[in-house]
Length: 312
Image 1 (tube, rainbow, N blue to C red):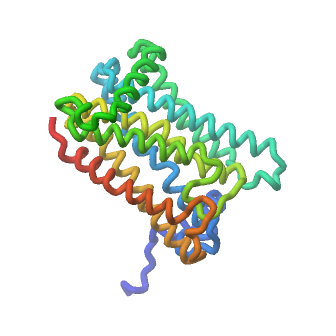
Image 2: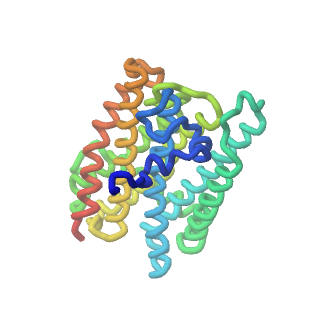
Image 3: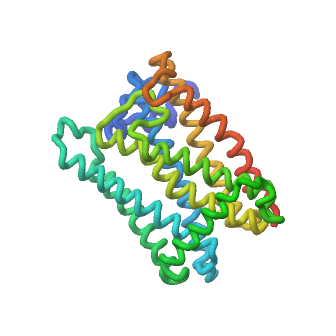
């Protein structure tokens, strides 16, 4: 009978022991976890790599620019620098954490990144970083020019005192939005990267893997999301947000932020089931979550609107 048939669902597809062991999980659903550590590990799987969406979009745009001989454009040089930074820092971070795990007593280091995980991250990150570096050297005047361009971009983003009066005629309030977006991204993601504990963690862990996943979101934010904010700021100043490259970047940024916020909300609901007093967590917990959502939702709306409806 129809009702007697069995169908493979997403939860049962992932509820295989090798996958669960690899992710250090006890169940495939956050609502069935037995510990808050499980919830955080599950959340890390979805949130820590959301910036990959932006990185993949940047790589796609760079590939298109290469086919059309446009890699010498300042826009694509900015994207090349972002890909270089993101790939290089990811490779360095996973190699460092793996080295710490190997150098530490096994009982203290577990769980630490597996050799397979380290290999996958390096195989994905190193070629991307090399491609970004190659584009800068061959088409952008070298690393000195990239540094000078970044300094000028940050100076432009810092012109906030006059509000919209410091914006170009073409940029207006959108230029002001992307200026604030750059600084919010830098400060928020920098907090995740540099803070000894996660700003929204319900439980703080100190194994190599836990420290790594607690900071990798900040790494992606500082070295991928923030540089892309400068790309979009420059486009806004020139009235070019309707270009296909900038639309793709806006949509991927909206998708990444939405993924982060949605996953975090789901896992906090699971946390409350396990520990109703999660708001008193050492990382700030619920109060920091309220702030993150309040900031993120308007940003998602603007990024998405510009990605879908911006005109040249």
